[in-house]
Structure formats: structure tokens, C-alpha cells
Length: 17
Image (cartoon, rainbow, N blue to C red; front, side, top):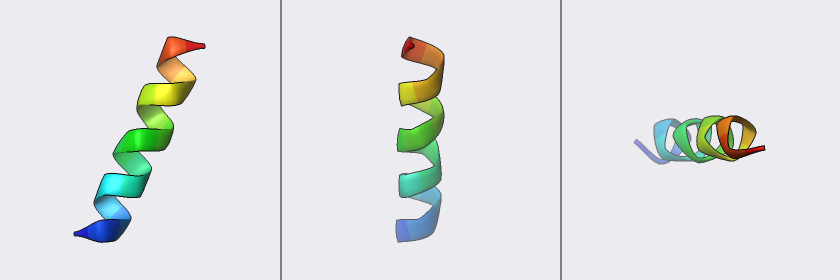
């Protein structure tokens, strides 16, 4: 679950950039 959250956070950051 934590790993998924981290991956989602990274994806969100990449999309925002």
C-alpha cells in the first residue's frame, strides 16, 4: 500500500511538471 502511494505521488509530480 505504501509503495503504491509513493508511486502515485511520483506520477502526480511528473504529470504536474
